[in-house]
Image (cartoon, rainbow, N blue to C red; front, side, top):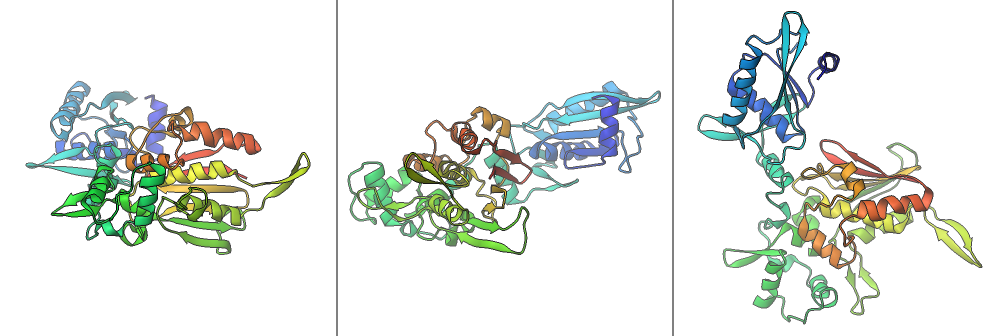
Length: 407
């Protein structure tokens, strides 16, 4: 880091990724700040900078300060980490120590030693605090160490899953022989084998994934399972809306026995229907036939919505996926950050990832998910280029991920 870059960091004050500290803070306090940054998106701790942006400098020898920082990271943090250390000379008599934590820390949640216990810390704005149980679970999920969708739904029985959709999936999609009574042991065993249910205390409870895919009323048991669909008349959110709907239901559609007619749509089909009803097709002639050209291609909309549904962070409660149509663009926003080390640039290059593998597997069986797992690169980007020559925007922030398509 150059002195000019340090000046810019200090001028911008403390942020979610920058913390000012004296170097005489306790080892536990330093470890807490390091852990909180690792559990967010990395960042910098400037040792020798006061909260009022005054530069006081290191009070100990820079080499001793480096040894101390590395010892804190090894002894007071679990799992142990190795931060990047450097110093920048502020003036002839003043040196600032800089502790940099990686944005791609893979072993979340990181914990700080507090007495005989290990405590998870998170960064909220410019403050560091203890993580809630939900925040800690989300960090485990981000690291890929647990899958939220495999959790059993409390107080629910496997009978809340739609028998008709399951039968259609087993017979028509997977080509299995009929199992008969959905209360049978054979039927329940298949649900468990597919991670749609788990055994708990002599009963079979549906998993979150099972409810999302095949639940008769997913919203009742997983309130964050729907899509909030809004169409505005202008280019910005406004009180005046053309349409405002809560799309709800299972991800899996229900087709007739021949597999041709759609009897009940899944969420992906509901989303496309909302877009179709709230955008205007343009007519053109293809030879001697008139053809309608939608403002957004159906294949791209289906891919974007499917990706949002199968990859969103369902551990974030109280908010749905949003599908928003403006006069010049369409946006689909998923709660939660991208998992692990996935980036928008990586997605454009064809990086594969799956936060909810069971959802991906089943929706692939139905043909909604690209078999190669590269829908952004293979379908969304070339689909928009071919449709109107535009590039989709992939936008990530701390709490959500948005795909923006231009009209």
